Length: 213
Length: 197
Image (cartoon, rainbow over all chains, first blue to last red; front, side, top):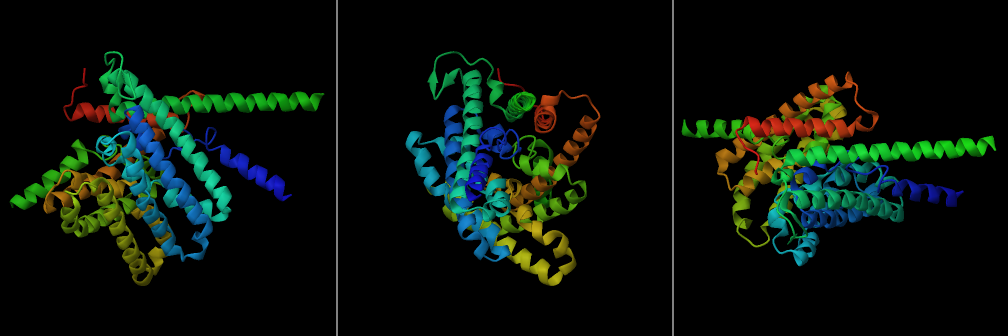
């Protein structure tokens, strides 16, 4: 019984990579990507920062959260998330010294995004440490996939380069502005929604065929 | 008189020209949360304005000490999150003791009201621009009301969209994002910007 429950929890956590993508399906952390994620490097830096925030905060919430009084929980999660900006700053600085300059306020805003503030109390506190770590990892990977695709596309069309290596003239520099970020995210979200429907229908057809046989 | 003019000019700038949602894209997820709860908009906007004003006033003298350090990108947000935590604790116990009726409705969601991107963004943007005290407070209040204004506009538009025939794949988050993008583009043009070529 516990094995089945464990498998269900793992498959639920894995859903955060695609079918419950935190950005494109749940609509979280949108602003940071729309405005800050204008190059592949920015996308990578935001992804590293988000992973470094989400995993420890969810594990902390799972292990210690229930032992804290209600009023202290959200405070401790957010302060821990803010402190995780320190290692993120040094790790991201190793692949580009000025990356936090170009990202402005957006990495810091990840510390008060929905996952550390709301998910930690609503979901992670009910999970074991391992489940919370897996959930955090999957949320982080889901975010990273979106950030890297969006950042890559905007750098390609906006600068004519990828990871700073220029190989063409900029096609459309306006693509780096926030409104384009929202529009591109909207189309990506529609793609995920259509793909989810397609997979769901495929599963239903397979199920019906099995039942008929 | 000069201070009052400075205060209102910064407030209006933050409200319309540099709107927190349409220009800065800060607090978008929280906007989608509030759009579904129209009765909460005024209350949350006032809480946001109060929290930003209080935290901005507390943080102003401290930020000068760390703003020129090499690690300002980390130290300034950590400081402001610490101040938000302090403000949260004070407001939590104040509402619990003095306004127990309000606490039942609001106390449980106070964490979301204080710790959100709109609040931290409204503190970090004036700090990054090194605005003086009056401008910091005016800008913070303008950003908070600008957030409320954006929620109202988005809510109205999304309600209208519910009556339109939207392709299945675009229903929900996708069409809301595209609508937000178009509104953001409209604001970009409205304040006199031209698209880069």
